Image (cartoon, rainbow, N blue to C red; front, side, top):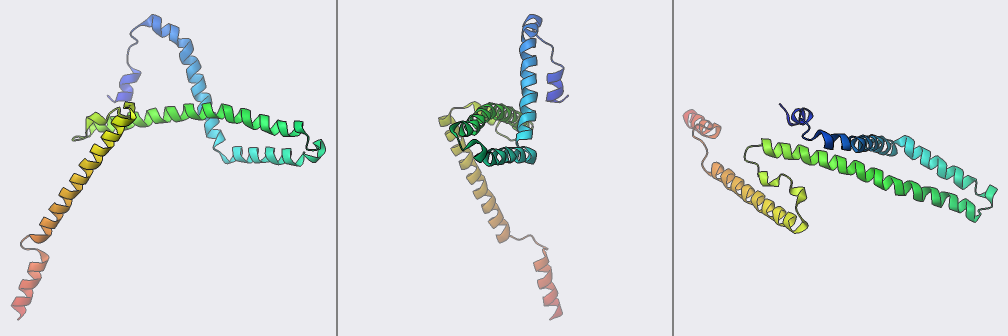
Length: 176
């Protein structure tokens, strides 16, 4: 059974806690779906076209309003409010995507033989520990690369008998 199937079939430990969180879970799910749809739409060409059209209409309406302070305030207020709200929607979407990505990577680390399982949940480490972990991973990668280069050089120095080169030399010697 896969991890996602196990999660779906997990029993709820405390029914009272589950029922009190149901309202919050419903609200959280609604916000999650709303944020996902809004961020998907906000990244579309339709959204860009709509925003561009709004700015053009605003700009062209300037002479009709005499480029007044109120006319300028409309675009300033509108863009400020939209930007403020979009920060939270995009951040929620990024948090969800980040969690899902880390879970997938953790699952791969757990399933992969020889992988350093200490890297699971590495995103929870503080900055200093992450730097130390990165340095250790870099050192390990360099060590493996050096070993691979040495092994490759060693195999070039000791070619296998019966290789194509040896057969060609024997053929030349026989033809002489």
